[in-house]
Length: 355
Ligand SMILES: Cc1ncc(COP(=O)(O)O)c(C=O)c1O
Picture 1 (cartoon, rainbow, N blue to C red):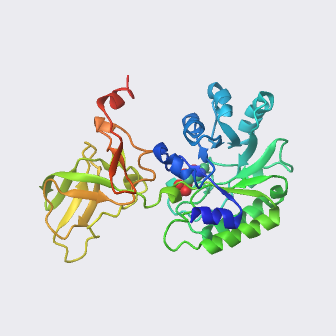
Picture 2: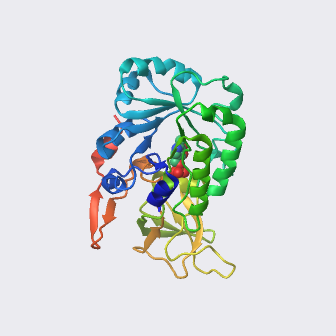
Picture 3: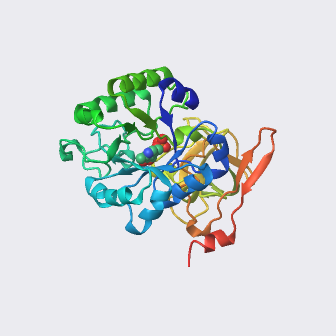
């Protein structure tokens, strides 16, 4: 599907590592996507070493002591402000690396409802507003980048583009490429691909630009589960909690932060007649490390498996070792139906993050 959009719309789609960076899968991803977008030196290096290509880079700021190495791993560098651009562009020019520079803009429109995930809101630190733009873009800026969508459809992108053209239209004639960020959930059921393709084709006709999209979630949407086991059942004032061997805060932080309610295999949302309601409790000592009740339709007992669906994106990349809790094992179901263990975590992994 992603490859189809790419070829029909005549655009480039790259993977946002911040959403999914399971590098053992990169050989498969590279069959379809040319590269990745990185937001730090570590991600850029991972792209260079494991995707075997240079990264499109964006970060709110870059650090002087990392910049020389960053340039080695990057084909595109997007700046968050003109002051960052003024600071680092001379180094790029001097370096002789073939790097194309861009500036991130705030299109001043987004229909993302959760503030934590809305970079388009007024006062956002991410991207330059239209009022702060000079009449002509400074020498050396080849591209414009924006990112204001989150799990969105193509109709939201259409509204963002309308606003972008209103606010930044004249600059679109001064550049070579535009990177429309992530949040394009084109692998979700019901996404209108034909609309996206037409929208992008028309945009390209108007501005003759190379168009890049950099989704994270869409690349790994609904591709894997997190399997946990009930260790104990506790009850307090009529509330039953199944305590698991995983932690929401350490392993699935979006379930608390976003907040995002995961789908659990075999469980439903509570109804008025639900008899078998259980909270799902994490193994950390954080009081809020639990999910509100689900209806399991039967009594839960020690040893039962609780399977969290769609747990690949924004999980592995966000985990912590809070409380020293062991990371879940990472494994792949192979095409010939075998479970291949990719990585198990040890005491050394925990210890090496501390000193
Ligand atoms: C600049 C940028 N690009 C791409 C993405 C990926 O977004 P998504 O995983 O929603 O597609 C993000 C997510 O925060 C982002 O900040």
